[in-house]
Length: 346
Image (cartoon, rainbow, N blue to C red; front, side, top):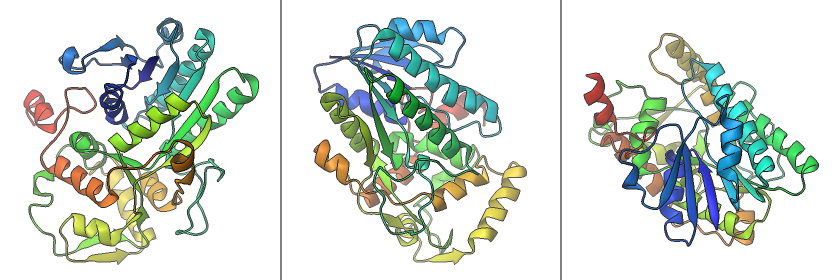
C-alpha cells in the first residue's frame, strides 16, 4: 500500500508517521518545510510543497499518482492576525488536494476535520453522533473553514462516487512533542511556560460550564490508520475518555480549586487582550471551545474497532508537561521553543 500524507510534519502527521512505521506501507510525506534532518523519519519519501501554491495542483497530481490513499492533515491555526493566509492554506489548499486526488485517480481520501466543524448543541452534556450538523461556530474562523471544507466534500461525494471520502473529526489533539507548538499558538512566545505544574496555583479562573474532549495524537493516528485499511467512508468522531471539566483542568495545573467566571466577561477580556497583542488567541477560539458539542465515539469503536490507549486526564497532563519542558520534534511546526529562542535571541 502507498499512502500520501499532507501536513506530515505537524502534530497529527508525525503521529501518523510513527503509527505507519509498523505497517507494510510506502509513505509520501508532503510538507512546506522538510524535517531536519530528513532521515529522522526513516523510510518516508519527502516532498516539499505548499498545497495552496499556484503550481501545487499539478505537482500534487504527480505525487498522488499510484497512491492508494491520501490523508489530508495540512491546516493552519496561526497566524490568526493574517486571516487571508489561513484561508489560502486551509480552504484553497484543501480544494487543491481534493482536485489532485481526483485527477490522479486516488480511490480513498481521508480528511482530518475537527470537532470544531460541528454547530452548537443545546445540551452541553448530550453527546452527538456524526449526523449532527457540521455547520460550524460562525464567530470562529477555524470552525467556519472546517465546516466549509466539509461542505465542499459533500459536493465531491455527490459528483465523484469513484472517490471514497472518510472524515475524521477529532477532539483537541495533544501529545508531549506538541508542547512548544501549542504554547506558541495559544499562549504566545513570551508566556512563562516553565512554571507550569512547577509552581502550584492557589486557584484557576475559568469560564463557567467548561467541558472539553481531548485525544492523544497516537490514538488519533491509530483511528486514521484503521480508516485507511478498512476504507469505510463517512465520518468518525474520535476522542479519548472521559470528557474533561474545569475540575480536571485545575487538577492538571495543580490548583486546589477553580473559580467560575461569567462567560461574557471572559470573552470581553480575551477580546481586549487580543487586540492589545497580549496573546495570539482570537476570541472566536473561546466561542468554539465553549460552543462545540460533546462527541459520541461509538461509530469509531464499532466500525473501526478502535479503542483509545490513553486516558484523557493523562493526555492533558502530558501536554502541560511538554509545554513546561519546551518539548518538540525535528520539524518546522513542532520545533522546540528553546530552538526558536536560540535562533531569534528571545
